[in-house]
Length: 315
Image (cartoon, rainbow, N blue to C red):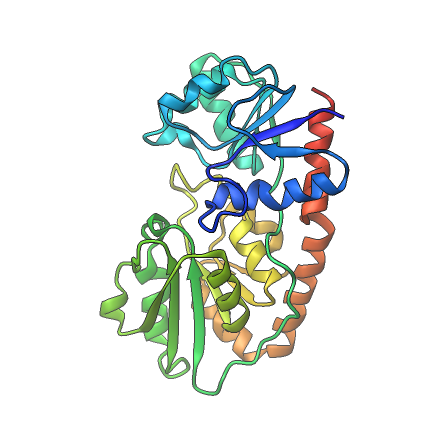
């Protein structure tokens, strides 16, 4: 069996392990260990297979120059932001690339074509991160609790006034008391929330906070504009983890969310979906349950680990 080394944004086990490292590979690496593939975080590659997650500072690139089996995993379109030069270096020097969604693969293929670089790109989806929780849907009378989590910048990548706040105000006779919790690292709020009059609280980001709040709220809401250059190919991980926690997810129709339309509510009519769930609690619980079964059949760490192993074994 080949030795597998990988470089994450931070070492596994550290409390602030970043999203891509935590979601993409931490639990998967544990699953690979169980399958007999010894792998470890190592800063200086000397193995046949070396996985790199994300884009890195220019001064870090020299550590990869002599790597024979460099796999570059790219979960966001780094070619579209300030990391473009690092992204071009990795594209030129890796053996192949992996990414999270078919849409992101197409985006990357266009980038590589424009750069004159030929590289194979393989889609390996994000696994579910959290343990499964029994689905529930028992809103308190007169109160609806909603949760959003993620990077602060993603709050700016959705029209909250159009998708959430204005429809909520138009339905005040049905939604008299909606409370929002926002979990992120910088303590930011979505544009327009102050004018909406909505009640809210801010919670510092940690995986533990995300898990605890996800289990306890009525809805996880994930509005986003999926047509922006940085969001078009985004992964399903936020939606998957919400369903895993036993909670209904109301999400904009991002491409990677569409396969979950029978389980979550995947539509820009977020408030309409909320009202539908409140009127149909038993259906809501059943949709969550079926969503969890779909995730167990397709996106557990063991299943995703096997996809990585299959890829590595054919290099």
